[in-house]
Amino acid sequence: MRRAGRDTARPSAPAGARWWQDAVFYELPVRLFADFDGDGVGDLEGIRGRLGYLDLLGVHALRLTPFYLSPMADDGYDIAGPRAVDPVLGNLDTVDSLLAEAHAAGLRVVLDLVANHTSDKHIWFAAALSAAPGSPERERYHFRDGRGEHGELPPNDWRARDGGPAWTRVADGQWYLHLFGPHEPDLNWTNPEVRADFERTLRFWLDRGADGIHLAAASGMAKHRDLPDADPRGRTDPRFDDDGVHEIHQAIRKVIDEYPHAVSLGGLDIADDERFARYLRPGELHLAVHPRLARTPFDADALQAAVERSLATVASVGAPPAWALAGHGLPRQVTRYGGGTRGLNRARSMALVLLGLPGAVSLRAGEELGLGDTEEGSRAPIPWEGTAPPFGFSALPGGWESIPSGWAPFTVEAQLEDEESTLSLYRRAIELRREHPGFAGDDVEWYGAPPGCFAYRRSPGGLICALNTSAAPVPVPRGDVLLASAPLVEGRLAADAAAWLWVQP
Image (cartoon, rainbow, N blue to C red; front, side, top):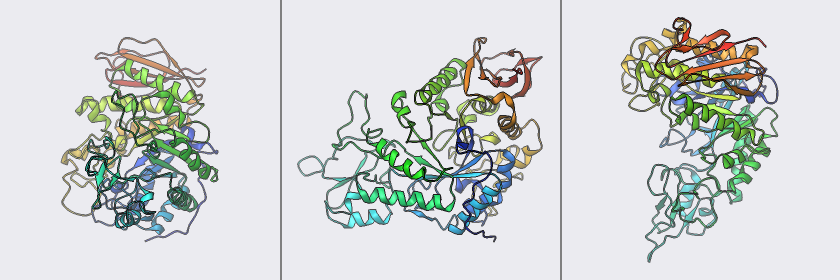
């Protein structure tokens, strides 16, 4: 096995301190990408072995989902050791080698971190359970006495993201807070130990050569000091987006800014545009992705409104936009847009809409292959080659119920040389996005379009993206066709299709 020494040198492309502003990020679930050691679980060595594919795809940066020590109650987002590598996935030498080889290939690497909570198997939480109420060990989390005559009721009425109670009672009668599952107790960010430990984690990975971090649940770290009940009218949510969270982001950003080429990203599900924009003010997150576009139906008017709203939101604080149609916990586009051929056609068209927009773009591994959801949602391994599961993902035989047997046409091998494949569409789109002059400029101008359609123009570059969500072919705008998600029909844009055109300025 090859090993490389620690190498913090950054790749040369894309150049500049603001390389992330229009980068294409590739969200890569470590356990689902490629299995090197044949145990049936994707690992860091598997990613090293597939760096050539990622270079071929043309993305700028990899975003690795958690690979830290974890009991895996929540796909690794329940972290028991944030500065340790889960031995199933590799070790620190593997991380160092992956970073060095990715940089040598011109790829940057961003790491998912969780600041809101730990695993219930973390050494801190074990110590808290063993300690008495009011102890320093419990002050690292949110332990409270219950309500009711004997403390038998939770401290407030908050619900966890899974719909269950946000509080769990322990043996001595106190309750602890968990905005996600009981296996992920929330950290108390007013505690100096919590802040110092997270800063230590940041520096640990950035010193090793990581190019930035992505904060999961980026709006949840601060809690209202009174832990009030939820607003019965639903106008506010005291569990997330407390004003105190911005001071936490500012402290994190101060560390990030010590590393000139590092970026901070966050996932934010905040409905209010003004409050969303606050996370992108100077000194907080560089980029934040909202699931709005991914939740918008395949309808031209609704999609145009979502894009316009998103652009206006980030422009209010002078931040670049960031876009995604897929991600952790979201259904894949093919399934979301109707499944089968129709869902695939719509997913291909939306890929051009997404990649044509100014700003950063986040892709989820597998969307470039046109994969749909399985019985386990989007959590199925990547099909690489062959005609039967596991399609080259692992050498381990059997046990691949999560990979549909009909995925042979969707493997990388099957699509790589097919110029009409979804993989080829993504490769060409990313290449044009990087190299074509039509993508210059951050302004978006909207054209008049037939019912069920829209067309926007990048200014001043001149790229035009036209989308047809209607049931019949429509005329295309004037210009040279650079790329289309489906063949034109007698010079017209097919139903459920999109095209890029260009008129030289």
